[in-house]
Image 1: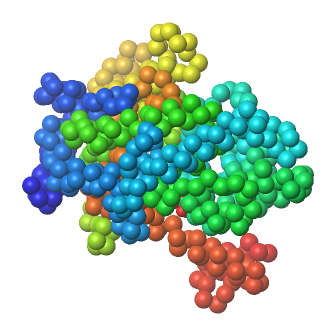
Image 2: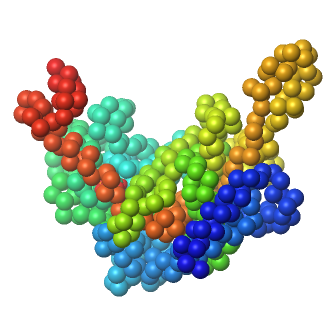
Length: 539
Ligand code: F6P
């Protein structure tokens, strides 16, 4: 089947789907739940509450086949130049593969180097934890300040929040924003003698990170002997020369075939490996590697990243639903929506195909979210009753960190997640709303008047992603699931998910604006609005 034919069938079945209700699909297709659910690397995904009919589901799979998902998946794992605008391989799976794997980037073997850096990280992390690698004055490190932004920040933050002990032996703080307040907050209460600063930047050219790194260096230098200061100031980068030039005492490297937003499996998470301990970091890698194995080998119809991607493509392109909310029902996963915003929107917020021609369909939706149950008391009103349908994704953890190992799983957290999915799908008719009002003692007139306000149309889609516990392995599998899902969407939309030219223009203009400011005011060619804002802000 050609892609054009596959898209035609996709559109036809999407139009048919729009005339059915999700809840009725279960009777129409008794195997729906089995067909549309999948187990992968310790996660369970239920996509049966999505809008698709069985025919539409099959049409989505045909679209994936026609888009050569299998062939291009193989190309990614084979280290071909999948990132074709930058001529780079895309090999984050190599970073979490077991020792002794045999990945090649553009034909060059890379696994030995990955193993070597990992071993170096482990030795360093364990030495810091043991106090063998200590500060300039001989004191153990008690805190780490992780300086980085975007992909050099969001992934490690998710890991730390998800897996951190309540009272860690080594505290970990993050600084991303160029606003000095961010650094000031992070340094509050810390002692330079017991603080390790880890500067993380793939390029080592990022304005925010370099400014923050300078500030951290000055903070250390003011309190420490000059000859020992570099023990407190280390770099993680794909540009080791730049890090050394900047003054980093030691550098952990990764390569340009690791995209920034896919880099948390590398030394980018060194701070987490130190503060959480190596076994935790290794568990994370193992979970992701298990998801890699699943993605690489499972047939498309039972492939978790593929099905998750297809649900999104179907919502966005088939049913014109250009937003998706993600609600992790675990406080420890509260950073997941921010991480996914970069992963998905920086990867797939694209307007041209791989060959440079404009896209004719939608690509990445707006992704947003808050942890459950907080989101329920904020924007879920719109998700239930707003005129636009916003598909929801519930990440559900059966047993929280606080539950004892053998305790029955009966958390009000996941009860709420299930209730939201059910309410979105089933809804409440106006008749039922009126009957409810009458049962509550309202007059006939009042019950009728309120009934439309209390009506839920239902038929709103959601996906459930379930794990038993938020272990390092489950977290690794979850993040890798989203990475591969993002890649598959890019294949179906025929875009390059691994470049990010869209962030460049703003960076260039920010420098030009600052140059104007230093020169005393707006240059003549600046537009009137920006010039007026600059003048106002300068005075
Ligand atoms: O501005 C976007 C971006 O380039 C991201 O893609 C990247 O994750 C982030 O900046 C940080 O870049 P670096 O790791 O090179 O400092």
